[in-house]
Image 1: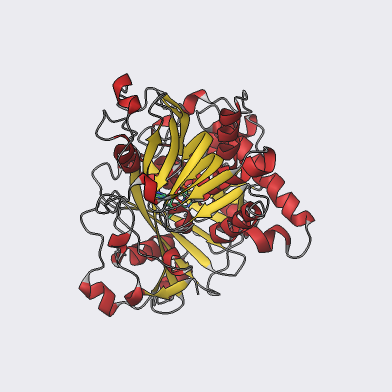
Image 2 (image 1 turned 120 degrees about the vertical axis):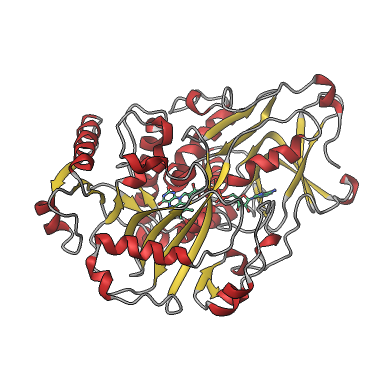
Length: 501
Ligand SMILES: Cc1cc2nc3c(=O)[nH]c(=O)nc-3n(C[C@H](O)[C@H](O)[C@H](O)COP(=O)(O)OP(=O)(O)OC[C@H]3O[C@@H](n4cnc5c(N)ncnc54)[C@H](O)[C@@H]3O)c2cc1C
């Protein structure tokens, strides 16, 4: 079963790098609330998760070693997609190691939107988003070609179209500008008045001044189904010796050649994984801590990726609200694009610089008939604690847009699942994809924040091109680590030591 009783959620303080102040469930919450929390740790064989710092690593000699062309650290959507792309498009062999299991991180909480509506033509992430969307479309078409339930069944794929909703004349002006910019960039987009919107989404209320931008080509997936399909594809390469996955086995350190200083392997809690060509760190919001651990006691390369916690509310087989599209309030866009947008954004966007909670309405119905309502954003470290007030805030926010919900009593003990994830947030609003200065065979792919599902396939292609030394379909330069960290040049002396063992 995917969903479990809240009271039996394993103590999240076992999570890797749980550095937050409070990562255990409060006594009151564990006793009183019986709603379910999707916890990927329960989905598979669950082993104790060693915290990197509290565990004394075994010596390298005690561990079993294996040789691969590429080692990927992290089996979220980014790490698994990178492995998939390498396996499908190159002859290289790949090992993936995760501290827990796939969907433990942000991926398991993702709403599933593969949207263009909140992208800005000409921005640093635009090309990557366009390419990634194209790759998703190709994957869906390929899966459809396999017959059976096709992409809908295997990926939770739906071409719902997206509605980015505004309720004031100021927001409508922003939506009109966005519609124009997206249309000029070749995306089908239409700005709808409140009256036209009524016909598309009868239960949505935006007031007289409101409306929405409609992108009929926008799609959604189910993160769990998609990850499962990608895992299946990857595993099909195991028999020919090209793929190995190690779950519940956190990466602990990097091993370097004493003679050349090159990083040769990743040491996990149980294995040494040699990566002849490259080592890719795709450990989401944990990447900053992981790098610190990898590079200590030497000068630190500080990639300022931070966990931005989100709650999502899933109401199973919900039949009291009918939705025809995926929806999002315009206020959400400001959280997504941070500083990288050239389009003016509504004023509410500077919300949580100091860690305060913000809630924006997102709503869709998935292929299983579940209503998915989002979402919250806050900086709260790596706590996996469910803040029981947040589902109610999410519900109330949704009810402002869908008045019919005001007449429905939210009973979170009934068929309700709460998902929690830590978006890998970068302060400059774009992912970090590229090699570590002075360690050219170590690549980082993280910082996708609220867009990791949408950008995963494009990121995977980009990382593959980087490893192969290809020019790439999308310009790499906006994602480079350079100038985005308090990078300290690693002294040559340090290159000859074996790390953290
Ligand atoms: C509420 C919410 C809604 C969202 N909605 C959307 C959406 O609609 N569309 C969209 O595109 N994106 C969405 N996102 C964002 C998206 O989910 C993330 O950007 C994406 O999942 C990030 O993927 P990742 O692989 O980088 O990180 P993660 O999924 O966090 O994966 C990182 C992995 O690294 C592992 N790890 C950590 N430390 C170690 C270690 N030492 N050794 C080995 N492994 C380690 C973790 O166990 C984890 O499995 C949403 C996120 C949230 C929270």
